[in-house]
Image (tube, rainbow, N blue to C red; front, side):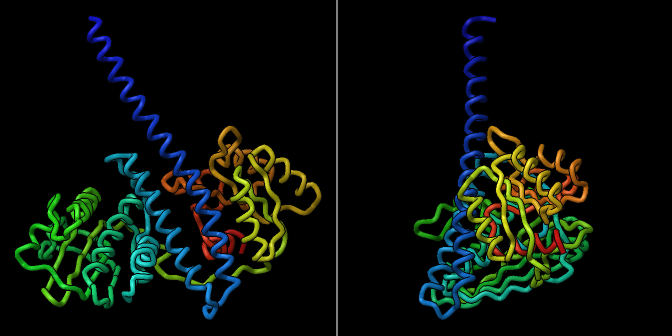
Length: 384
């Protein structure tokens, strides 16, 4: 090989290595950022729970919650950008994504929202970050289309597409999501252009929002369709292939923690996260012990079991830089106590362990950042 070709090979290899390093660094920065958001969101949840709607501070706490959740969505989008065109597809329910997007994009805008999700809604195979990106874009457009405010109507249901359907898509079972506004509407001559890259009618628009929505939905083997009447509003309809599984979060249920007493062990290397989770668990009535890595957690669990006062549950961070994380620790923990109630926690929501935690020995998973209600639900599901 000539010196020139050898140099070109090294340059190409260096470029690939730099790209991989940038992806790893982006992932780690976002992991740290999500730990910070966990601390913020947890403390806001506690402040909100100790307040009432008549307090002057209450709307500011709600506004801070929305901003924090928006920051989390931006972190997910940055992570998706770092992955480039790579999609991480897994079984997922869309109901939680819909509710989160509505809360994020509509709450605080002055617009009303009317959300109805069918209780028997099916799941899909999708990339949750990308699907959320689509819903956020469509809801943001709906808000912007109504300068005089109004109601945004969101519906999610199961639908069977036949050959006679108006949708240009393969027949089969789909989840249909519709977002309807009462805004200015879209002229008929523009309906065929709105999904084209760089087409926009906004003065400061980039023309990539709806184009990216179209691209993401098509990559999920679905379709997106728009109908509009000028002066009356628009309705965007998304169809995504359904699988034969029910979305467990389609119906929102109030959860109750029976006998919230005893001790819970929290394993996390971030003191701020430890403190926040500890405060939340204390709020429920639990005593809390902490461990900074898997080795310490195992020692604490053994001692508690030997004293005849075992932990009711263990919340374990999936990854501990430079130490034993939840992935390795759970193997030892199950051998110590086959009936252990272990909950894995992480900001890496696409990690296989988070998606199929029971296959790795965990009883449940919870995604960072989370609030009081989410923590309460996972504890209820695990311990009740």
